[in-house]
Image (cartoon, rainbow, N blue to C red):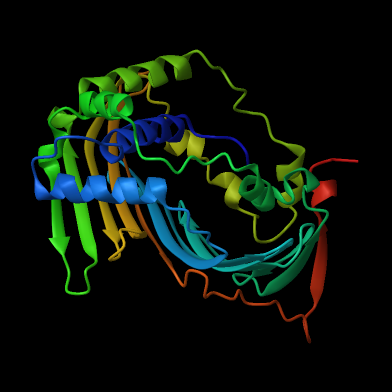
Length: 323
């Protein structure tokens, strides 16, 4: 369950570097799209809005050499009030032809409910990792977020990294004063700074030699549950080969939807990466997805109803071999 595919690791590094480059801009915009994007960035940097509840929807897909290996979508509702948190959500995914659907509910730190809609089974999950309990409250209290605008030095550095990409922005203004802002970058337009970051990520990845055959105790336990049975045959390590040479961004597209106050309402993105594996075979991976947030401070999660249901208990502590 915890094993990561090399190509996804590289893709994540590339995506992070690329999105950082095209979303952190500053001074001297000369197009309407660039100007709108800069205002969104500054609005979100300086926003002190506290989100106590919201609904988040999203979907994600991974395609390898033109064939889809993963499709996933879901919707999550969360609410935090004082020391109390509650979450509910529905999700569906298809991993290399294996389809699964489920729902989850949680209203305290160490117990949750998993509904396996694929097999019609219900589970009560106990002894969730206490190490992470209450993290939501902790980050709110730490006050580490700096709501100041970018300073001149940061603007100069980021403007240097983006180069001429400011000309790739466009904006559409809607009648309700919301905006859709897009940026589209082709392989030839990727800035040198991003290409260098990709080379570093690829080199670091080649120095690591994880044990691909290692199977955790947790995964061995999960394989006894019908929801996870069969997923062990979906070997992403084989389907998504390790890209070690000539790793490059082929295409990057990012689209943001913001309201009249420049608060983010939705995001769409697509990243295509190419590269060669150890055998010199070229592969092309495309990752795309979209997400949206709504019902800010007006969302109430669903509550699990155990009435009339046969519920099996899963001890998360036992699955991980913890004492």
